[in-house]
Amino acid sequence: MNYLSINEIDNLKLWVKEALALKKDPIKYQNLGKNKTIGLLFFNPSLRTRLSTQKAALNLGLNVIVMNFDKEGWALEFNDGTVMNQNKSEHVKEAAQVISQYCDIIAIRAFAKLENKAVDLSEEVLQNFVKYASVPVVNMESSVGHPLQALADAITLEENKPINKPKVVLTWAPHPKALPHAVANSFVEMMQKQDADFVITHPKGYELDQEITKNCTIEYNQEKAFENADFIYAKNWSAFTDYGKVISQDQKWQITADKMALTNKGKFMHCLPVRRNVVVADKVLESSNSLVIEQANNRTFSAQLVLKKILESLS
Ligand code: CP
View: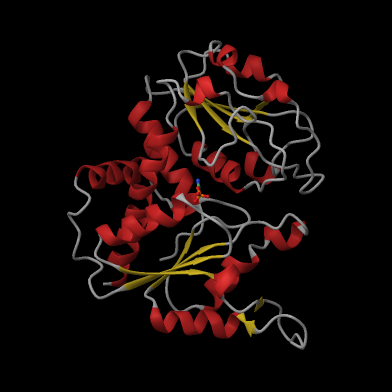
């Protein structure tokens, strides 16, 4: 069993229920991973994913090896038949097979480079490890998705929803740098599995991949979208059509207390890290309606549930 996208989840309600049970008793399955090893390979920086996935693995009794592949590994070649006489020292074919000798599960973080849309959409790093590794692979944020984050968000929504069918708004927010679409993509895919009134709001030109947002309600007026919302999920992403470009940094899209006042005492969500007073005002982030720390806490139980299911599939 791999965990590559939120679409691996057959029944989100049941997965969330099981994750909440793990949260109540995190060390119940502390022998499940005994004498097994997970390798966490980071091609990009991380705080939450790195620590929460380690914590989840330790709760299950797994040994953990962490490698900052971008700084410590050989530069990898991904193309077939390349004459490797330039700056790439090792092919992913050998690397993935070798790591599979040391690890029972491989987890990978490899962001979109936002240089070549086709390469990013192919999830080059993740999918090549899936192809050549002989052990299960977990997506710790690929160029397309961040399914561990989306599962943690589903847990957080379940714990905090005021009604059975809440209004949830995913809003674009400004940012000085071009950011990938992975968090927004997986959040949309997760929301499509929820019983919710779901609205996406962003400036024109920031449409996400329409293959992912098909059937979603898009509202270009942010304030209108916020009306009566129970949850506001803020995230920046770069343009998808004009791929990887920052076409606006309009501070009018920042999440402020005035805008939150339009909601139904709405809770504020963000995956973190977040740029204060650019994406969201201090007052919102520090308010009692902010769920960002609980979202980060739930990353442990999201990862733990996924690793538990993989370990059970191995035995
Ligand atoms: N939300 C998230 O994935 O955080 P990190 O990038 O710090 O892992």
